[in-house]
Image (cartoon, rainbow, N blue to C red; front, side):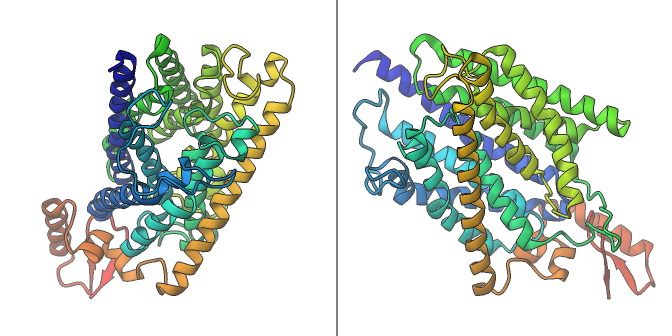
Length: 440
């Protein structure tokens, strides 16, 4: 067997594993950014929904994206059986696993907009429908030879396909679910509902940062010329720049060096460079990351002012940064590196590529939001609501949805201590980090 075929397959298999491990990063990110009473629920539903998306991708998702069809959707290769694809240059099953991982990440991003208030059944049904009716369309349009690919749309590893798609689904969910209890006061001012573990959040960013080397560099799907090293370099530089920029802007504006904002800046830099990592020079990667770090700071404040409760900031980190990352190639793509589409505005390419990128953002963003909104609206009626009851939200989804805590000993000991403190009172404190009392 050809050594290049084997090396390509090995490299992409390693990259697929790195991307799948990003699911662990997202578990820590969402868990650390939310309250302790929901930790077990978040961890469990993330694994379960990745399982659902994997089965759906095997049955129909892969065929809808890469199957023979038209410029809108593929219509073949369903129930993938492990065959190799002629001309791909690597193992078919390896390529399948790599693409499956991307679909799972997009769904995980979408579920950021459901956090701390959606029913478990809603996660399960939406995982199925998103994996059939939303993600495959956009992935086919750009990566499967669809109409945006025909226009030369540049999205090397998924700022649009994965991140913007997931963020727009999250926006639809956030609007329909409405804010968490206690997030906003009657005068419209917002309360900061802090996550329970900042260390988890920092660790999640490190795991995602490392996983992104599989995400971006693995998208070369080849070891030829070791170009994956250049892509990885751009990825790291943008993440570093986003980290520094978000920390500095929060320090300047707020007066404190905000750690969660710094972490969001790192992720924003990673999201932004995902579209352009193979098309731009290293200096441009730094600029793209810097701008992403600043944008995510102001985007988070904007969504909060609009009473859009986004617990893990998916709309800003993946949506706003995804838009910027997609547009950035229209400015910075070089003639030497623009293997898809045309050079950017700053390289005498004119506005043509920027226009193509903007068209992709508008079309994909609108499609993902509208279809997700329709799906969730139908689910809201047919499933008698998307959201758990007020009582269930107050006690936490660990207990209300699963009957056990993610931190059973810690939560129970804290609850007992508070009950002793309030002994004789008609009000007992709810479990740790609930931020709401329960009435006997």
